[in-house]
Image (cartoon, rainbow, N blue to C red; front, side, top):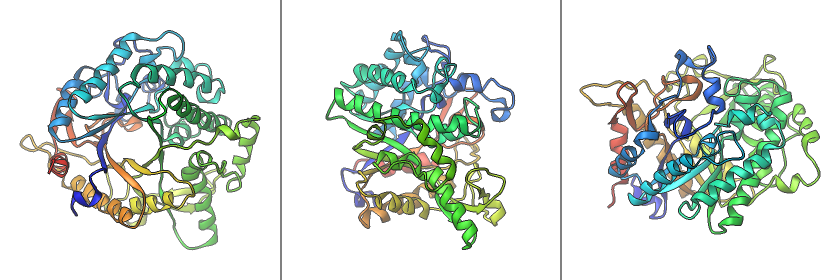
Length: 445
């Protein structure tokens, strides 16, 4: 496998998220986010961890971007913290927050690194959550205001945007299972949050295009390749229901196909939140779709999971021994299968892998991290991306998740996904073996 096989225009980069790396939780006028509040609640985050400092990117962004440059990384995906721009979600703009992101953007450009900005990566201002958050239809207008401020402030230099990161994850984990911020659970929160996130995704994209018609605008969706535990009707039907919620729920409306309401009875209740004119505002011709995929999941029928009547069979229960620190099966063909699935949709725009990577329990040895499993994971998955590309899938980029070890949401600092090791006590950065390999892969020829 040679990088040249992907073509000169193929995009290579790394992805991050504001809350996971920035720290500076109360610096520069930033307001509270739902994760600031959620992580203070006992038992919510593994080992009682929090992201008040995280990777201290807020104070060390120049150092990190210079390291990116040193590692030959040409594209940097990062997100903007809504509460750093608008401390209470709407109203008065925090100039210190604008200045911070101007610094990040300008430093990228000075170093020849292209900034890719994600507008929403799960960290809603707590003040808006207090007013219902994603369950309140007014959030569509709140989000528009926030996006407009970001585009007016940064759009003269940022030409590549992602509106949202994995809506099914922040809506599902945050408003149905309650395992992520804000910690709500139940269908009465989930369904309105689904619809309002869909409307906001399209509204945000329109704002960018109205202001900068030539901007490249996408949004990202997680996708899990699903297989039934056995070829029995009961499991196959369970898989179809799980697929509708996990993979189709947000993607298909954006493509003009509507919600997959016929697959899961409970989804029919979405209709009561759809007002006249909404259906036209649920679809948008994005310039690209970001695909985020890590593994495959095996599904079985279960009476314990209401509405979908299905659950995921853990790899260890299937006898799988080759897993990551997240207990995800390492199965490289899944990224090929996900790409083929996306390409099968009519009117699918170009695809960019906006997240792919693996967490392992990395350890320092003589000031080095020999993460050979991650190196192989990346190589094997990139090989599968090439396989899809050579079969005609219009895939145009690949971003590794993630640049530095970070705060991994409810899992705290236990899973390390980074190409760069972070000592969270000293904030020292150490490039791992995988980072050295990726640097060599990206080295200008």
